[in-house]
Amino acid sequence: MLEKAVFSEYTTLNLAFGIMITKALEEKDHGYARFLAEKMCTLASGFDMGKYNECAAMLNVVTAENNVEGTFQVAKQLLNNVDTICDFQESQLYKHMKFQEVENPYTEEMKKELLEGFRNAEEFAYMKEYEPWKKLLSGN
Image 1 (cartoon, rainbow, N blue to C red):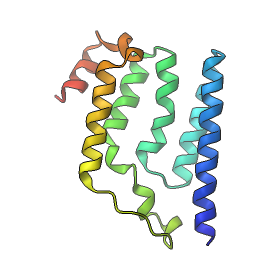
Image 2: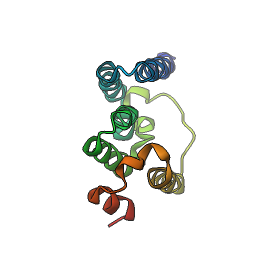
Image 3: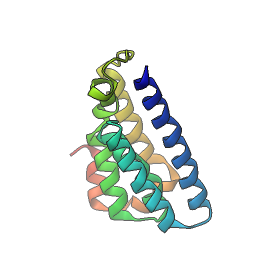
Image 4: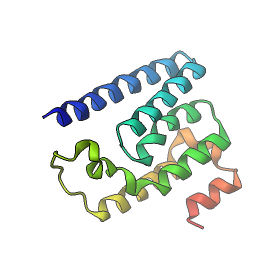
């Protein structure tokens, strides 16, 4: 089934881009990391992976840059799109594939974990005084 090959190829490419972004960030090459993350976003879109996956790659880049507004925007997109993480299951691209059903409580748990990470992870310390960030994390 070719759909499995397409899905598998996305997984491989996603992993490769993720490793390349990590390497670029280790080398402090934020411009290249951003370029790669944008490609990853396009990749996720082209392979119908859902809005969450389209913006997830950029989080590491904006965090490494200590980009307050960028971090806020990406975090907001992630939180607002947790329920799209499995959208690929409904895509015409994979219509002959069978996927395990993921229940809604899983997405709620993931949202809670994201919020917890944004509140407590050291890499987001630069965000603590940003009022929109505080409001986002409080759920208001």
